[in-house]
Image (cartoon, rainbow, N blue to C red; front, side, top):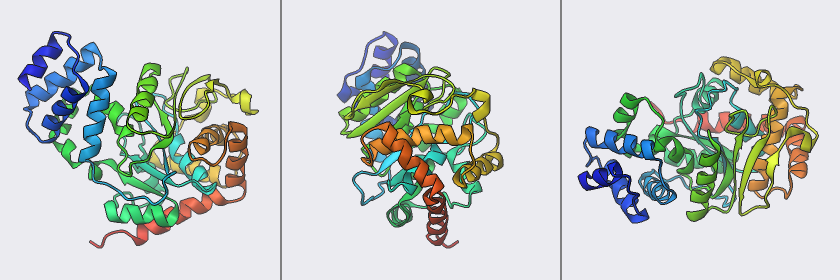
Length: 338
């Protein structure tokens, strides 16, 4: 590791194979805390290359606990977080709408890190048992059509780097890797990023590692998902190019960022319940916009206008609400006995 650190300090970039070797050292616990901190901050200072990020992602996937999902078209709807917007859990709400429209959703997430409420927090508030181990998470996804994988359970090797990450309290390349390392190995989905260059890098990494239908997004207002308050830049991989998307393009009204802000897990769960029971307004609109494109990645439609109609029917026909209930029932029935 010492040689790699010296080279990074000198501004050199690692090859793909060297990045893989570095990640093996980290995830085997063979790097000291000081070396780990030096690596994370050194790369943060000069910026990670695409080869480096791709190598890191490949190896982190290898160390994940695998989850078997039957549907090859299963998707994730996930973002890096860290946008500081305070919105409700848009991607989590989008998951139910997509599942209600027939998509299989294998969601990978965590508790809150920088926001008031992470996906695990709001799902727990909605009645989902979020800490299913691999076999049970697999059964939940395959039975209910959607499920959740709680990141700390599926990436045990990260225990070697987590104390350093907490001590640094700074964004590092691990913030980018998280959404790219779904334990179910999904090859399609909607991936949001906290910055436009990160969105582009994420898409290229996913494509290099076998991604099939991938959209990566970043909105001008900073959101790591499609926004109804600003223009969203879209990168397409294995799909047609959309480039820039505004809510008006799909006939949806624009709104302010304040209109889609959320709160703690209780507040956000209430917002999601209201959306699923058919309440109108900006909360519903931003979820419809995200679901319209996520359904394209699931192979359920070819264009966002068709996706929008599927998303509306999922909510108004009750499919989205039934998907939430199916996830609650399956996760609780599969919950390991104490």
